[in-house]
Length: 355
Image (cartoon, rainbow, N blue to C red; front, side, top):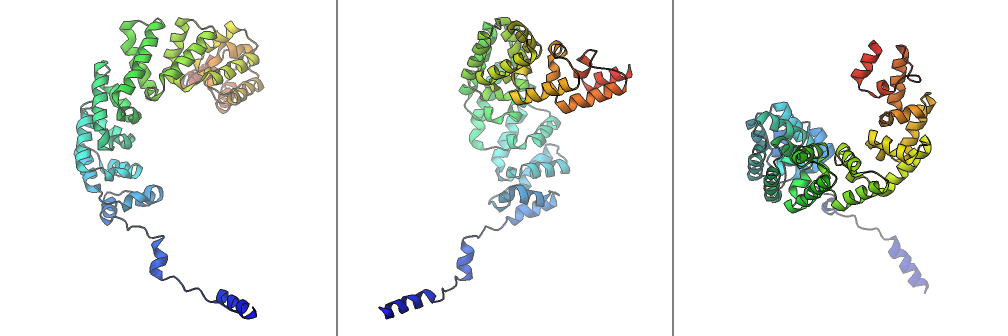
């Protein structure tokens, strides 16, 4: 038994053979960078260190088409700094093959023929332009559909740039949401002659409304109807919120309305009037509203003033305090005057101080 124990101990003490350098490296080996991509980036004055830090994996891909991307953009009128900026922000562009890039150029110029404008869009939204060929047919179908709605090309271009997901998916999904919006617009008393303009404004302000569920829109409007808003008032809210009503839900709106009513001590009718003056009030969660109400009250603003000009609640506490100080320095006391000045733009504020 002693021999067995001794043998066992000896075996445990035997040195473990070291792994060969080749075996040790296999687990952490990374493909070498694509030297052609790296060299092209250097030639184009691309901040390659920033690319390595944020999206270094792109530099290891084969094949890559950095020269082709630069040629395409240069041919469209892009300057060297613009090309470099596009490749820093979206280096994945080099993974699109030349056929895909040409197909995208043809597609985008069909809605934005102005090359200078198109280059500006690509610089701002490169990921929307350099996309997979698998989406091209959906993009074409969606362009055709939105043309059929008589939307102008500028609106369609904005949708493609800022909400590319809506153009990459089947056209039928967008059609369902647009049909829902148009139906509610008519049911709430909107004039058919103005529907195109209304829809253009809504999609321009919130392109992502197309990606929302029609059921969400329906539930939110039903909730507001149950709170006493008339059809005309619902149309006003839907128009003022410009599709952002789909970002809300009945629970959050209910909490916001209950808190606002408690803080202002107002009736249901007064609360509805306040919301109609300031539809954005529906968005803010309780903790944000609490901070803004308390900031205004600490500054000496009365509840009645807030009720008269509820849009002041759209301003952060920091902005309110800054503007109050500026006005006070010029002899205007917001505590005894109108909050319209406080709530206005910088130009309005400057005009008030000048007077």
